[in-house]
Image 1 (tube, rainbow, N blue to C red):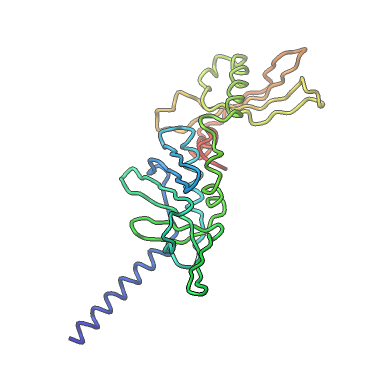
Image 2 (image 1 turned 90 degrees about the vertical axis):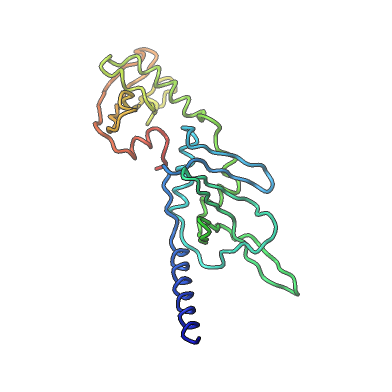
Length: 256
């Protein structure tokens, strides 16, 4: 009987060690596996960000990057409050799994009463019933208020860039007609401080390969725009086979 008890205790100890080891591993989510993320606030509504929406995909990538680069934090991983947490993030994976992120509350007992306060910058990450306590100020601030400030659809700045690039595009040689994808104004500056005269640097990707598994090429354009000479293309270069990360940055699908 004693031997059985000892064997049982050893098994329980090993299992607990494995569980503890798993709980100490930082999150490692793959953005391509994410279907959507949804923020729910106790006060202030909720918002769903879908992977299928090109603009919201960039937001999802930003959030997942914050999660993956979070630092592990010491302390309990169970939410001690019975009340609804101030915020909760649900990440729905394409395989059906759901990952949850909730705030951490530090609780102390005073005169037979429990007093709990939210831990600044810390969250509880739960996946497959495993909980990890971690610290990320960027993620914490975004879950508090940042998600409400995200643009719905293309931001105004992006639309202005597209409008300007469209104007410049018609001055290019027809040999560059395929470079219409993810246009950006990389730099714009006044000539001698004159508000009517500018030097502009713009770029875009070649649309023709957007369905193929090959790297994009990127066009770089330098031009001047003045009242007396109109728009003049000064220099055009082609950057061959840019990396996947660079193409996502170009298309505003990944933060720097």
